[in-house]
Length: 450
Image (cartoon, rainbow, N blue to C red; front, top):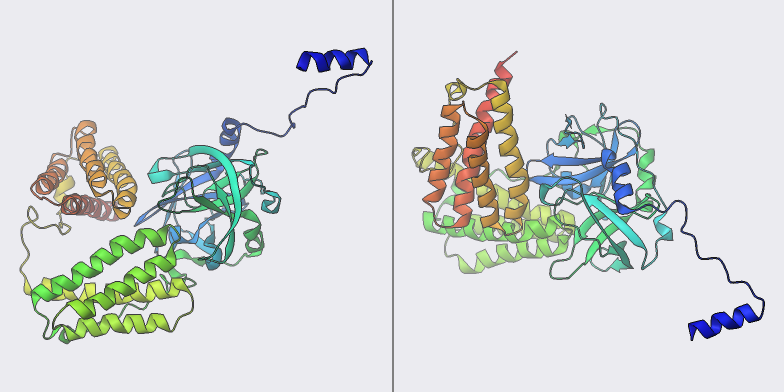
């Protein structure tokens, strides 16, 4: 049929139209990555890792608010491995989960911003981020839909480009290499249900010039928290088994709700927290003080309008009780040897006697990398994977460092302690406390060295 039509065209003396020519500004994913990666950063905080990127001169970078929410400090790591601290908050938009940060001594080329209003379903896009701490991972896909999420009442770009925890805050590019969105959340249980905040939402925030240190920022719930400080008497008529039951309910709620919060499912997080408080009131006998404290958290949350504030009101109630019970138990129970105690050991500086600065830098980097990758896995429920990564870091340090005998012995002791435990979470925590003990003594050594 094609040959017949072509012959008819030629017979009629007609000319065929020229073949379509690709637009000159269309870039391949590899070209976009090559241009963009130097402007993309990894953001490390105590509880995990996220992504950000330069949007303007003067060290201004954007990320998701949930990446840094509640953090007292953050480390910005560039593509060449350079680290910077002293992070300021210039602006934030809680409803769209955006934070505009500034690092004064960070000189990165801003990425070009496109028009997200022009995005259409079927359009090709490229996402770059740090999923699970694996740096500068490039993925591509399509704009699946322009969708309003009922839970948030906001418009998002639904994309098929895969994103994972750690990608939050990363740029989403069109084929011209312009940023049209900011990767922000994944819907659990759905295939390729990934969402990005439209870049047009960010642009009004770029006019802000006055910043405040991240540790002092109180614009979002976590930094302006009101964790109650309870008297010991709150635990009257609450025996140790019931105290443990309260902690177990709280622990399960946080382990389930916190990952949902970090992925943007804030209402779900709050409802899990509130349900745990109400469940404690029904199931736990005695313990009137702790049950009243949890119900007070529910009452405070009921008075707030936004889900973010409600979730943090409940988390404040949880953390107040955790602090009280741990304080009471620490005062009543003598400390056990570090080999059988999962809490962070306190080492003498002599632990580092035969360590060079290069040795300590290697140990510190191995531990922090393991935590950056393992902690998000733990929070997502992949607890054995977290433990295996921690375990591998101890082996890696043994392979890479020949000196530092006492330091390596302390880490191996943590590994043996972990091996003796049965639940994966206890194994992971045994190694995490060993890590934190070594990091703490390294920090004391560095602080004492001029």
